[in-house]
Image 1 (cartoon, rainbow over the protein chains, first blue to last red):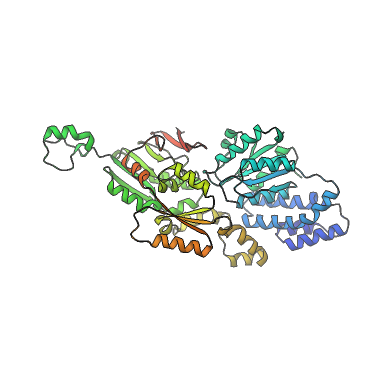
Image 2 (image 1 turned 90 degrees about the horizontal axis):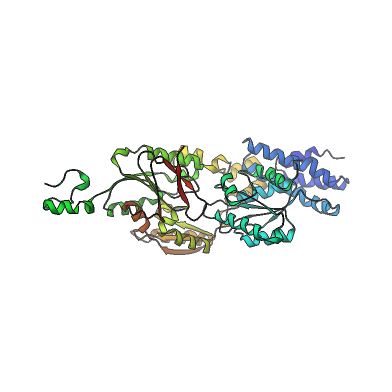
Length: 214
Length: 278
């Protein structure tokens, strides 16, 4: 059996080719896909998040770690589906209407994926209707909104209001983040969650969907 | 004799006493101090030359926009606090909320006057309604003005050090990234972090009418062509900047922050409000 701690290391160092080939080897050896994710991949991304918060990792290190995790996940996800393994939660992610900034959004999307969530990424300039329609279609438990500009921030309130008005949305939660966003603003518009960084966003998403960290 | 004191002085001597006394309020020059971003340098200078008020001015570097909002606030607050307040009626602010870089700006002894605007484009276009309308119709637009062409650089070492891209490890050259992360990851990171054409698709030059030639417009047009972006030239409107320096501070357009108060973002269309400073 392959020592999968090398998968953990490959993700943390952003080596996507090695991460992918190790995932393939592990699957070939009939390793349980869920245990690969839970024991090596999620812990690697959690560690990347911790290093980011401690200023050991910066945005580039986090981005390449997430890229390596995704490379492995592409092979593992079909096996998880075959085994009917449910993700930690389903999250619709996007930057709000009028705003085209996506570095932060992409980082959060990758971190959520690395945290065991299924991510539906709607890209940038997303209207309130698009968020809610995608959440309904995919049976998401959470919408994560990003904005970089104070000009586009009011679009967040529009999404929160639309979710509250949509019977189809059910228990759908909304979390927000981005450079100008604060907890005060989140409280004011009635958002369920807030994080001021990509790694914290994973913990916040876990809190909102009621799962504990791996 | 005319009344003594600058405030009541007529623009030229020789008028009869009663007429001067009568005209005094009209002739009163307000003494104001402007603290402005250098992005407005040409527009402010034009407005200052035409205002009936007597305005001193301090311009701060554009590079303050690239540092963390709380650091930007420190610099702008320091410039406000350096003003000898006993010489002025109010401090007028040549900034917008600037992604919360002005949030918390405090009026100490004299009022501060702040445009209700998210960013400088409102002041170049003359109203926030016009900006809002243009912005949402053209989400991929990048604006250019004389200031954004001449002064969009950071040549202050300290500000460069503090800049957010620098602090987040997003200031590396392609070669540095290859060295650190390998060629394949470097290419990926370069697209993720530096490829501006990824989401923007249009340059709009705002023509303020103070340009001495067509070079600014032409330069913006050429840059658009180079990137394969659309180009549009729109007419600017200096009137909101003029109203700021003239003291025409209608409450829907400007916020007057009284002494002992600070400005704070509202998160809605009013953009900023005052609250008691702690």
